Amino acid sequence: MSHETLPIRRRVTTLAVTVLATVTAVGFLGVPATAAPADPAVPAPGMVQQLAADLGLTPAQARARVRAEYRAALIAPAARSAAGPAYGGAVFDPAAANLVVGVTGRAAATRVRATGAAARLVPHSLAGLTATLGVLDARPAPRTVTGWRVDEAANLVVVTATGRGPTAPVRRFVAGLANLRVDYRAPAVAPLAELTGGDAIYGGGSRCSLGFNARRGNGTYLVLTAGHCTNIATTWSGFNRVVIGTRFGTSFPTNDYGSINVNLAAWTPTSKIKGGSSVLGSTVAPVGSSVCRSGSTTGYHCGTVTARNQTVHYPQGTVFGLTRTTVCAEPGDSGGPYVSGRQAQGVTSGGSGNCTTGGTTFFQPVGEILAAYAVTLVVG
Image (cartoon, rainbow, N blue to C red):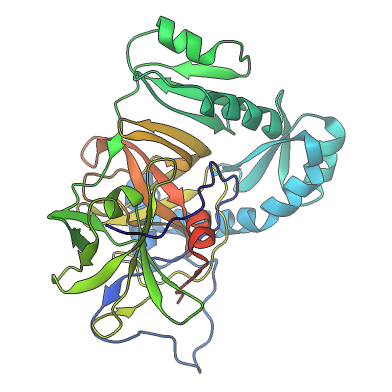
């Protein structure tokens, strides 16, 4: 089965955000030219309701949180620039409704506060933590290690491992590295695709979830989804079993993204999200922000972003540059979209747990997918 060979980028530290593309057969649902533009800081009603239910908030608290998260996302680039080499990561603090930036020096803290963010002194710069992550990325991981990431809230690299305590293989894996912590008793992780639906997509007798629609420069369109899904089959169909098109590209492991050509005679790409609404932009959500996911197995669920630039060691291979969340998901949800407010974030990769007891999930940031395929997202 042929597919486009794409450049593989080992790790992304910046999330570009995108929109969920749900394909329908009824025509493009655009915004009338006379309609007033929607406020990107105002969350959709469906998101407010689900966010309140999943995070234990009132609807008013949910709306206020999303607005504050959007403000934090807008000041994050300036705060990072102000911190310079002393930058130690940034986290949205829901209690303070503000972005909290870690810095390794007091002068940097003063500069950061001038941008409107809060500042806290931390021992490690993000550059140093990222360097440690790179050392781990280059080492062969034992099977008991399920992943490693920069935890910006803890200002450490955190390695997760199954089992009750240190073993010789894990000790060898982290040997010589000081700015990290190993968390044991981690559940095993696996890609969440049954590869069998919802807004479902079907290929090779399996189901995944449609993530986003994107437009190529030549006027054609692609469906963006998880790479461990597109690895399965060449031809993919939609929820009604009508063929969407053939696989355009796929990358898994190392990355977890793939794309499918869209047959415009049968399908119209839109920016809508099942359970939510059209996204309006691609502003990156800081760690600590709320995030919601849509999938063909479990529908629409919300949680928070807990880390970016997570390396996940799946049984099928290691994937770099994922984002870690507390959103639940189950097999078949793979490839579905993540959004924060009305800003899109990425597509479901894998995780652990379920939507009955809760769990941890990871998403592939959309920015890397857009760059790999040289496409732009369909937005509301």
